[in-house]
Image (cartoon, rainbow, N blue to C red; front, side, top):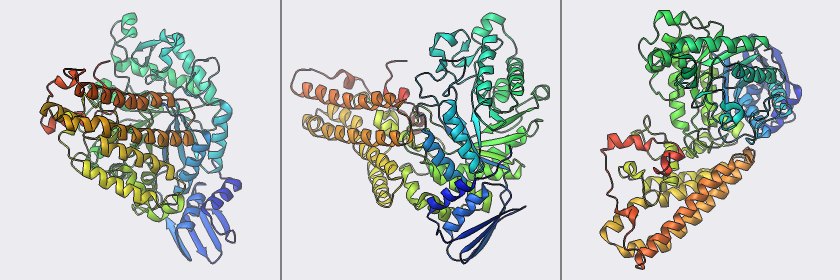
Length: 605
């Protein structure tokens, strides 16, 4: 896709940064990226249109006269925004994100849609999900193009489609779980309709078709209809059909690479040999493969996997993670560490296309803008070969990067960084039942109350210096206040009950829980404000139910404790259960349980 930039967007970006109106700019198409400021004149030489926006950020970041030449390695540097996991970002929020990405120097924005957009002939696509219409997406597409950014749609053409299967219209083309029924013509009619809509909406000729994590493909309705077949063959046949449809509408395809390795050997490609030669030869060559890995901090893990991928005949890209999908807070520091290792491995293995993902699994609780430190550092690695992004970050975000990383609310240190995603801790504290305390099997190994208080203090200090993004800090502060008071609540209730400490139980019921409920309500209001600033209203009913359930459960816990203390109950059944204990090394698995369903209760599947 040929890109340029618009004078309107350029002037808008300069105004946003507050660059002196007296400064004059001269932009020159060149074979290098160089910014030179002398007095009130700035000369920008660029070879990708988005670089004129990064140049603006550099002008804002640097003081006095300067000459700065940067040599970006990547041909395509992108970020994927998730618009399909409960939260549907407002177009205005996505435009703001695109502007910030342009100022950092990104030339691609991927938007992960699944079914959250209107499709002619598919009235149930995105129904009641806050779906985008064509005009909204075209508006975003045109805005991004004016920034020199290619907007790439990301859809699903095999799995991750559980939301459409609630409707009878699509149940007949369900293989198993969230997987489409391969071989059924209605499946391909659906996919055709989706590509037809994309062709009328997006200027990009690239579509990311998903095709990942369909681990049970061919083992449900497909098996019943066709008998058992080699699932690698099923996959490659389906990909061929999808490629034919894409070609019909003039699209080139990307897909995640995991299914080629997972179906063939039951593991994704990390180290060692994964694919036999006969299978390598059967992978369609005209589809670009994206190796994704968000979990490793070791360069060697990425390098080994990339070497295996390079045995394929396909063009290879890499996707890492700007972690915001394990709870209400981001994991900036860990994400930067992993991005460092991945970028080095990509560079050493000649991978010239790389993007970060910002998924929204299980409710999209974290802010769309919470991982901007990761985005800034990744850009700095690419453009300048360093991680010193502080000045550019402050120019774009109006905040010290160290203040923004306080949003991580770090309390675990190095010990669990590769086994427990930090945001899960806060989510687990919030949703851990005060009587059952099923997450206590992990929490009993921690002693984090004081660490939580320290994290809260650092956050509050950082919050005092915020302007534009202060609302994100409000949410994090309120969550941390809840965590300080709730992190060991169920453990203490169990202890007081087993010891017969009625006075302590009375204090919990009459004082602690009412105060905690106030803090949860405060968190709810802050989180709702954050949501409504960034996202459409659709999807928030999930959090009304979840957080409202926390409040009601706390109220009911206080009632149960009071009835026990008043003699209305002889025992509290939930507290009569003898707690199970595990060694810390085994209990860590519970600390990594990341979904509301896993945390909240064991009593419904």
